[in-house]
Image (tube, rainbow, N blue to C red; front, side):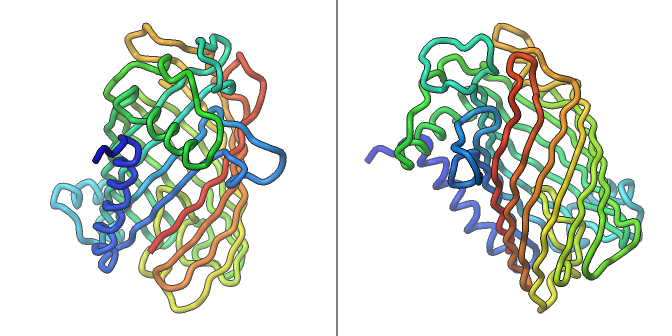
Length: 321
């Protein structure tokens, strides 16, 4: 029996979810799926373009239980009195130009690109501050299996197949180090809170710095620093209450490098003229009961490169347990 590559990828992702779910009894598992199709994004009909599809599975270990080397790193992140967690993640991101039905190169649009990666991260948390250091390694190019994954996904949904993946970025190993800090200036809040954040990343995949904030309104709010693909609830966020909340988030980024726009590091691939400053806003809602959480968000990103003046929208669904 022949199993196509994308089907195998998603089977492996499913098996990974089942495997780490056993560890969730002593920690937490979070799965996130992003997409820009009509099923995920409200409003006018959408198209496959820009950041068009992504998936991530992350496991967060029990508080203060981590490898020896990670303890020293956590001490530097937040001090010996902080609560710390260690985690692992795998994920895939897919980027395409607008006219995916064309068989010829599209020189005035971004290149086709995929990013398949694994991450290890350390989270250090106090009542008012959370710091996350994430170390990521993976591959950009055909070995990311992005082409196969998108074709399979489109086949399952019965929508047009992309025809230009032969022009995607070349295979290139990718590494990235990202530091994120979130704060609760007024400590824990029951119904309304504001969580400012800052982030910096460096690597041959992405290099940028950003800042923003998340406003949440809840009945009551879960005891965490806000829902996102890089944060999971701590023990304080696993009460027996039902938590319902809505949120709005905004972030501005200064982007020094993006392989998905600038092309391969050694050249020889398609590229566009990157815009150095990008804004992103998100709105959504979530629910949590004990260790189970569900979150949906709608994201709106400003122009990322000069060749096209449009903005981009996508939806994201996250499940944690």
